[in-house]
Image (cartoon, rainbow, N blue to C red):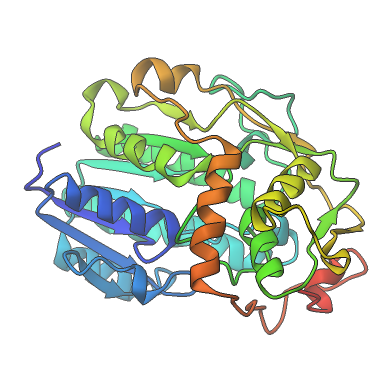
Length: 345
């Protein structure tokens, strides 16, 4: 990657995007532009050495004008409505913030000489296939969020074939760590658990807690998305990024409580409570990382207990955050989780 080339990071004030901007600037990249609508990101995340603009990518004409002005050669697209479980209740917003917003960036970028797109997708595109997921599996999403991510991937491949820009698709899963948005009640289970405890409230587990996930510490994601822009052999490839060790949600809860209360004295009122399973929630989701290990040199350097310990220490310094609920969900039925309808957290 030519470090003098103009780089755009969407979602630059968010958790993953801000870590990426910091990493690019540390690598010596000279022109790093960032956009974010600050709906899930924070001004405090913005690197002062970047060129930041507040922009809602759903605004087609404003996004086109911005891209026409910046003319980025490399785009890292991380802006997303990454609320997978909520997407069945906000399908329009999910589609607008993911698929449409992506096209509103990609189309003018192509017209202005885009050379490479690094698209952050999601493990949700695999749906409820049998894990561990590998990149040869077809996309088979079970939820609206996964549908939008699969569509973004397919659109990237089609438009690359026609217009000859290069691309890499990254599929991380359950990335967590310092800097994460703790106030979102709909996503980021590690952050939700920790923020509930900061607010002296119990957290909730959907179903029996036996569903399995793998969790990626932020420092085990950022270096590899940067490599995706540098290495020529990764062009046109898809990579799972994440550890191969899976945990049940019950095991995750135990680790969070242990790191939050290192003396082992968990107040009885902070014990987790159980609620019905959310509709269409995938029970088991984790991946192989063989391809990323071979080509990107991926390795897991921070295990879950160590990562949560670091995140808890950061969160305690930050202090409790008020959960920010949407004024209205697009669909409210008996299937809508009570945690959202009744704003329990």
